[in-house]
Length: 201
Ligand SMILES: [Fe+2]
Ligand SMILES: [Fe+2]
Picture 1 (cartoon, rainbow, N blue to C red):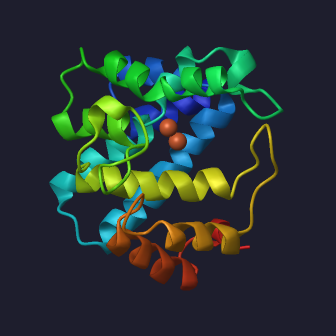
Picture 2 (cartoon, protein in one colour; picture 1 turned 135 degrees about the vertical axis):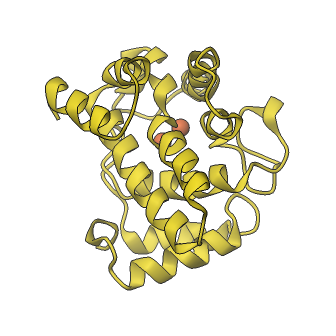
């Protein structure tokens, strides 16, 4: 999406200029990923019966969840071979970088927690950053499922997209630990109905 189109799209979604500028700094790939995660997270949130207020927080948090990737060196972000342990450490800092970026904007606490904790496991005992271990809020847990679905079913610099079946296997294997069991169940229900064909292959 061109910069001018991105700006219009974001302003139409009610984002203020500071957040629009922050999102404009993302690469096309990361911006597209954030948009798809937003779309899937909102579908999950609606299906789970979240209130309008909760959905508004989810909308912003899911859209901004990887905002910190603008601080990851391009040679790490776009590397076409597996990352070294040191490079993974750099990559994993994106959630802390993003949280620091938005912490001066007086966003809702749960929006900030989506950005900081979307890679923390649903049982609060794994993932990153380790300093945030503890059960993430439900909005974060929804974003986590939407994030992993999009990451697995999209081409990455270091591997082609994985199949939808592989993604479902992964969600089922780690439901109750990394992923919230109820959210996985809702995702399976809506994807089997073909609510959004991009999740099916
Ligand atoms: Fe992330
Ligand atoms: Fe992400």
